[in-house]
Length: 227
Image 1 (cartoon, rainbow, N blue to C red):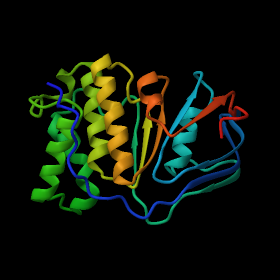
Image 2: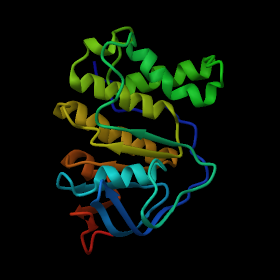
Image 3: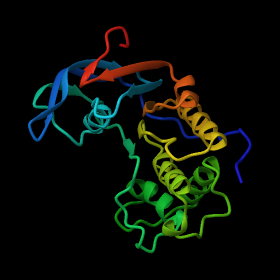
């Protein structure tokens, strides 16, 4: 069951800072994935990134997440700001005994400390995020029993539960029906209202329609006019 389009009052993100790439080059096994990309991602806004398969979109997200280091150029990321990255397909095995609630709760681990003891406010955030992506009633279901679209929503909820200052999404609407794609668009709007900096790789018109800015990549370069 999908929730109505109303959103809880979310804790604000930290002080907004832009993300900056300056003449960034990156290779995958000798193949250029990004070629001289210069880009400033506006703070507190939704930036959509589009382009054909192999154009460098996922590499761009990984650089913004701090998971990759460019061969040449500079990536400037805000210090002491939390980041959540939601990939298109999680590496978590379907055979692991994780429920939807377990998966979403992982988004609170950074705040829960080494013992991962969830506080009442953590549990409230988990419940809110499960509801926001339309998985109410599925909290106890194993991830392996979900459809591909439901599983993607579970990991979207995990990213939202982080309450990060920077939220990076790689094709969050893949495998989702029209109604749920609309919910994803609502989530992007809610994160922007919270003050988060959002970067969303997507080809979906619903998601693109709520973006403040569209950046198009082609063969590892920013298409002129899109910055």
